[in-house]
Image 1 (spheres, rainbow, N blue to C red):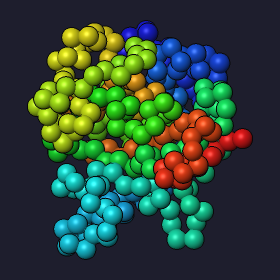
Image 2: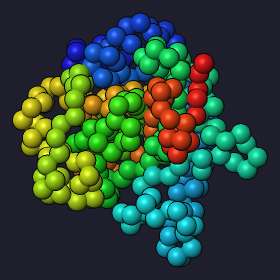
Image 3: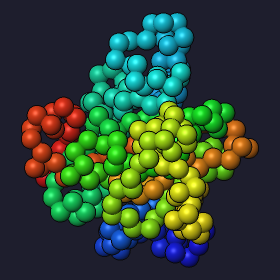
Image 4: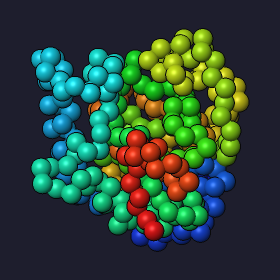
Length: 273
């Protein structure tokens, strides 16, 4: 890890919000260690494993509920709604309730300079596995597949398992991009047809981004990587990684100016005043 990347890492127990905000605005990426309790996230991991197993068995038996086709378009479940982490009788979106009590909300509010809204439709629980190399996500930016491009979204990425050593993680380019790279449909199709909507050719990215600028730190449950929608990133994977990775994507935005119908369609939830 280079010294320039060290400046992107913060500790929750001695958080520096002003410096963190400046780094996020400048580079597009910060990593905050130990935001959430490891034990609490361990409980969410148990729920995730149960749901993934259930949906996969339903898929194989032909009993998968209507509305899940998109989630299983690659032959197995790659992501599911955060709502599935809730137990019967619980307040909906338990993981979001955890987020609302964390240091993330004041930081996001300072970034947006206003109320923070969660985009429920584009916030998910995701599984990634090196045993399924065709499902590894190539370099991309989040902007092209997100709705409402005039309202940039921050992604708070939360691993539920240790990753970066024995399980795939994320590799990001914290170089402060502020625009969308054009997508060449032929290149995207050749890079990975499953992600042709937004994939960028690896060689094109590496021709513009130095190897020293790419960053794939190890992650532990409770850490939060925050990145803006212009950050180039991909699944970080090595052949020897034998464990699956489970992670949560919490996408937020400043949605005050959006029409109420749009907020309703995306299930947007206001998290702060």
